Length: 483
Image (cartoon, rainbow, N blue to C red):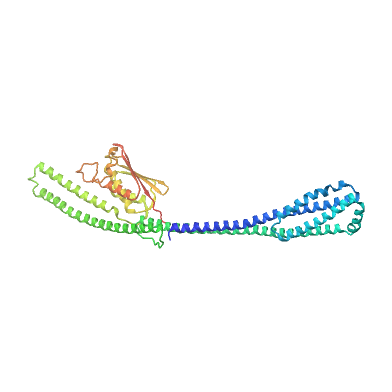
């Protein structure tokens, strides 16, 4: 499965969980809204019920006050109730239009109230206009508690109405609390699932990609170290193409390196064969010149002897060039790193190639874990160069070292004839020398060998010199610390 598909699936899962959470919250919020709406409406119902009942009670109190005092001012609440109570009934009908039981109770209250209004209207009219009729009504209805019975029935009906409303209100309150609790619970569950899915999918993708990229980095690292392995990748995604490309590159590099090694080996063999074949005629020429000088010494003219003296020098220079080429060809030979005491190494070299009348000063030379042969070649050629170009009777060589972290900066300084700055780069080219071509000891190969070794090590070399002021070669060398 491709990485893009896996990432898309992970995001899809998170989005689905978010959608499920939103849908669940929407459904629960609707329930919360409906229950809240009902409770708000229920408050209006109870408030209207209380107002209606209170208005009816005020009408009853007003009637009693009038009957006791015959003062019509007591009837003002009664007449106001005649206007307000029908409006309250109408409002209540609108509020409870979906509750059949409450509507029946309210209708029965309205019927009882209308019956009470008929009864009270008859008594008020009789009280105002006909005392005899009032007395009859007093004896036949009022004292028999007809009005009181109606009022008690109305009160009982209101109590039943309110009780039913409070019961329904309590149910919806519980439903509201339950919905709120479920909303919090489901929100927490979906949030936890979303976070868990996000963390798991992210961790899985990151770990998978990181591990695979690390394996490819390790492959690239091993390739850079000359070990041409391949990475095993059974996935079929975008990174598989990269892994396949790295494997193909590793295999091609291994093949090319093998071919190069074979060709280098063939070239080395060729160089040895050619050098042997070239040295044989040189020795022959040298022997012929020696025989001529021995057998015909009395017949040789001074001019011819001068020419004969030049030939051995040229043949010896030719042999030195061949030996220099062989040394240059052997640079790429590898050797195992070891702990090298550079002070002891340089002492051995100077005792072998530096004349006894020279002064050699060594300072701060450390122990290094490196390839001894290559470091020895560098010091040998630089010290040999210092000896060749020293001034007569002023043979002095100073070899020093500065340590910068795990890199050492060596310097080889002489007080010889110096080098013109215009030749500072040219001297590192093969066969380039500041000596005359007929001088055997200067082949122009030594500094080329030094430059090649330094470059192969990934280090740098610099020359600081002016004519007549001596020369200082400075090069860096890394300490390959043992693990």
